[in-house]
Length: 132
Image 1 (cartoon, rainbow, N blue to C red):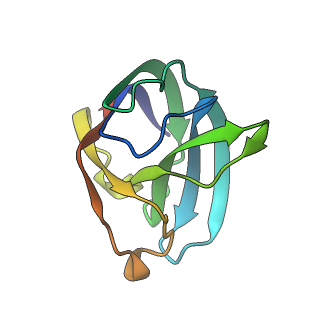
Image 2: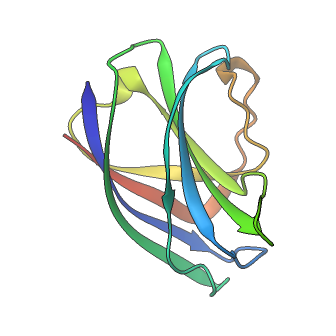
């Protein structure tokens, strides 16, 4: 298995503040089929739309399944109901070499099939991970 620590998430100039933000993590095949999900990570903060900085420090591991992709999605709940992902990023399991990475965040909607992705970058927004 490949282990990693999700260090922090930074979002600048968000169109919305987040009520009960959390990070959803899932493993998908390159064609978009879900393989497994990891427990959601609750986040603190999200009130300042100009600059949200979530210090996370959560550790996780994923199977070394080289045709899989790890997706991480910033989501939130509104009046107790899960909302669609607002921002997302992904990394192929085969690209998870040891070291620190700053992954670009993209605007919704999220597309799990790599061939159909239309990545729209969210300027100055990153998810920092440390791969062990």
